[in-house]
Image 1 (cartoon, rainbow, N blue to C red):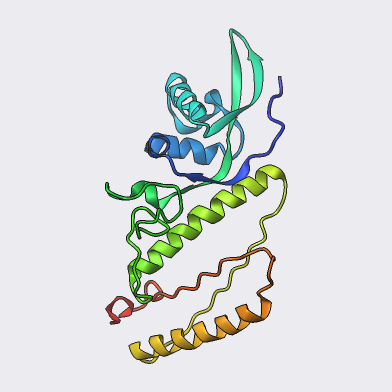
Image 2 (cartoon, rainbow, N blue to C red):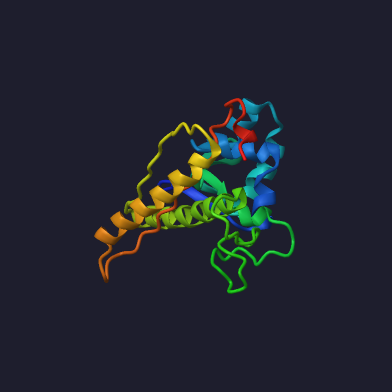
Length: 220
């Protein structure tokens, strides 16, 4: 009997600690990755060389957590084979879930106590601090994933844009001058397109050394 009528969403945010712990065991990560395409416990047990009862146990836990869902039931001799699939093609971890105790929680907003977007980070005023960049990136991951998931469920597209570039700076001081000029240019363009009553967009620009480049981590 066929059950699944709605395609899996592209992205889902993992923002509940218990749900995250349940999903991150090695075997369950393997099962979630495999179940981007529908499969049964019988199939995955054979593919992963595991006992079917063990795979069924993990299937049950993942289904209860809403990470996999029933697609189809197939009558077999002596039992019913349940075909499952992951509820999303990608699961993103909310960085706030991994924050040390004492954060402000995972509501994704500024709780008014200066903690900032991510409850696991304190808001850093220094635009050149790595912690500030991590905080902004964490907030972007959280907010965009949630909105993309909601849009996907409604069958509409979330309109976003991404700009990427690589700049080779001759000296650390050039980073400061570049940042100041870029901020001025962004402010001018934003002022041109800002429309009262229009839909607000958030623009986040960040820069970091290119990984793997010799000396990149030594810049001061």
